[in-house]
Amino acid sequence: MTDHFPVSIVIPAYNEEAGLPVVLAAISELAESDGLEVEVIVVDDGSTDGTAREARGEGVRLLSHDRNRGYGASLKSGIQVASHERIVIIDADGTYPVEVIPDLLEQLEMADMAVAARSAASANIPAMRRPAKWFLQRLAEFVTGEPIPDLNSGLRAFRRGLVRHYLPLISERFSFTTTLTIAALCDGLTIRYIDIDYRPRIGESKIVARDFFGFLSLVTRLSILFRPLR
Picture 1 (cartoon, helix red, strand yellow):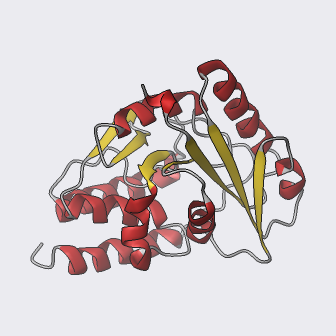
Picture 2 (cartoon, rainbow, N blue to C red):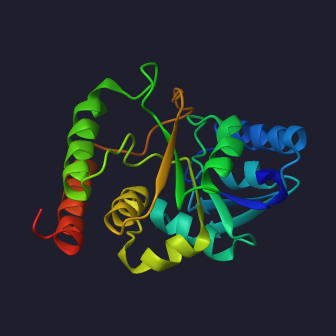
C-alpha cells in the first residue's frame, strides 16, 4: 500500500496568499483522512504579499528566497531539502485537485513518474493558452516518439533521484516540468498519467505570452540533446 511510504509535498509559491491556504487545508485534510505521512514544504519565492505568513502553519516547513528566482528554482530548493525519497509537487493556486495525490503515489509504484494530466474536456485551461499548449505538446511527442497527455502539469509524483539525475538540465524558470517529462521519455523511463479536472486558479497567473517562446526554445534544445536526428 502506498500509504506505508512517507512523502514530501513541495509547493512553490510566488504571491499566492489567496490560494495557498486552500491548498494547505486540503493537504491537511487528505493526510488525516487517508493516513498519509506527509512533509509539506512551501518555498516562498520572494513574494511581496502575505504568502510567507499564510505558510507559517502547523506542520508546514517554510523556505524563503530573498528574491524571485523562478518556479524551477523553487522546486529545486524544496526537493533538495526534502526528508523523503518520494516527492509530490503541486502549485499553490488551487488549480490541481489535492485528493488525487494517493492515486499518483499508487501509480508511482509501477513507474518512474506519475503525472496528473489536464486532459479532461472540462479542464479550465484558459482559451488563449490552448493553441500554444497543443503545439508544444505535439512537438514534444514528435521529439520523444511517445504520447504525452500533459507536457507540463504542475502536479506529479516522482522519486528524488530522478530530479537529481537531470538537475544540470533543469531551468530555474517555468520549464522544470517540461524538461523532466521530455528527458525522462527520451531516456526510456516510464510515465503514468491520470486524468484530472483542472480548476480555475485563485489569484493572478504568472505566465505571460512570451513564455511560449521560452518553452519552444527549450523543446528544440532538448531535441538536439536527446534526439538530434528527430
